[in-house]
Length: 254
Image 1 (tube, one colour):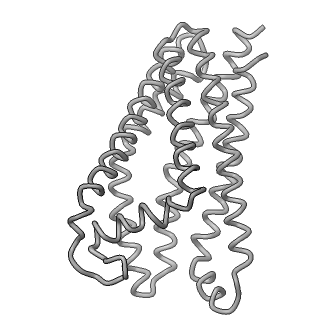
Image 2 (cartoon, rainbow, N blue to C red; image 1 turned 180 degrees about the horizontal axis):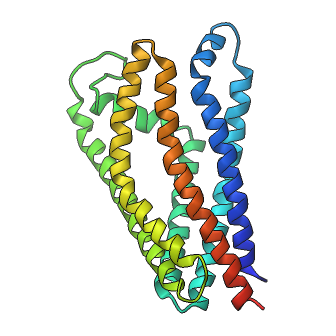
Image 3 (cartoon, helix red, strand yellow; image 1 turned 60 degrees about the vertical axis):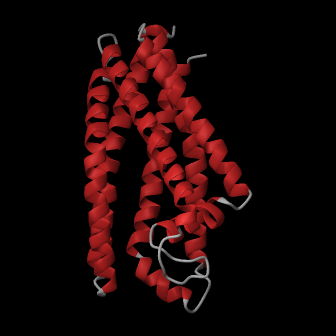
């Protein structure tokens, strides 16, 4: 079976699903105020449909992404890039493990209602379980620090694996077209990512203040731009990676 060719196709499909997901997210961003007004008179059926579609796209996209990364496992084997092969395998294992953990937590209803919301409410803004503001609950502070530390470690681990995979893709670029450029752009994306996240954080705060003062349209534009820039960059990387897999399939899968 031509796994790299299939992975390239999955990459293109994932790219299209990402585009659909982004369009639906943009619709929600720009109709946020309208949905608030509509929800006062009805149940916002259109909003619920969009939410279901977004969840469906996310699930299908996740499956395709895992199959897409398996193409790089094969590519690393054909180009003798152990870095690309091993890092891609570890990325697949990590994402599947995280998906299973979050899936189990979501099924038992603990993800949002019993873990993160109380954690943020009690330890960050100092809100008691009854909804009253007060001092931070120091009794749960240790748990909060532990959970946040684990999240930080997991994110750093994923970034390291993604960086190693990108470097391995650059190595494979000596044998496969588009792979070198895709790897370089991926490294740039991962390097600039933390800085952009920091800028996004403060921009979101600014957008929140704009909403509070009734300037929701400008806030929507700011949020849209913050999503648009990394989305376009990643879509370009994804396209180049898919083209690299197609080229590798022609050369090695005969």
